[in-house]
Image (tube, rainbow, N blue to C red):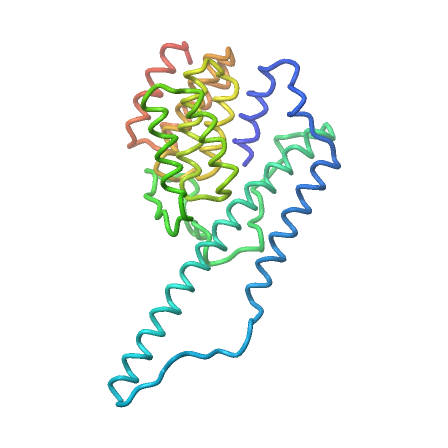
Amino acid sequence: MRFAGWVLAAVVATAGVAQAQDQQTLADIRQELTVLHVEVQRLKREFSTTGSPAPNLSGNSVLERVDAIEAELQRLTRQTEQLNQRVQNIVTDGTNRIGDLEFRLVELEGGDLSTLGETTTLGGDTDITAASPSAPAIPTAPAATDQGELAIGEQADFDTAAQALADGNFQAAADQFAQFDTSYPGSPLAPEANLKRGQALEGLGDTREAARAFLASFTGDSEGAVAPEALFELGAALGRLGQTDQACITLSEVGVRFPTSANASQATQEMASLGCS
């Protein structure tokens, strides 16, 4: 979080005078915290029963009843997995939002951004988090992520936006990926969607917003499959924005965090072209 906050500060500093939509007050942040509180309350309602259970375990023989019990167990297992994925998505999205709010609060109050620590997981430490306390802080390679359960139309919307990007229709791709992020908060596809949105914005020549999108991709899953590419693209974008020192530091992180990835060699070449020491 500290690394992500520092880089985001560098991106914002490059813009000069911020746009009106980037100006947030404490009231805006309080409103966002209220939204998060509502999401937590909705999760709590999942633990309330809706009536008496009425599983269909009828049968004319012992074997038929055993088959009915097995089918009911399979149904309950599927529902449990779906609910677990839903809770995990909300926790991940909520934790990222809280971290962003902490950064903006410190920024608004003129505090020291370097003092920001790791954001506490929404709802406390749980078994559904991606990393355990004994896990290493710096992965040697990006871990493959399980996409889990997707909402109806989620994959189709992602594919449509990705096709627009592949066709060189950068404006449509940027708009569609932005809409995807709004329509499917906490989506397992969000890191890749933000990465591709950044690439579309780069195609439009909006390097500053592209850098924001690359940062969102990396912070959304800093150990995921697209994390090395997102971090590399962020460093390269900072270089194009004239933030050479920040670009060199960011690009060097690619080799440190993901030494075996293909983006590590790209980052080395980009550092050489920037004259990084």
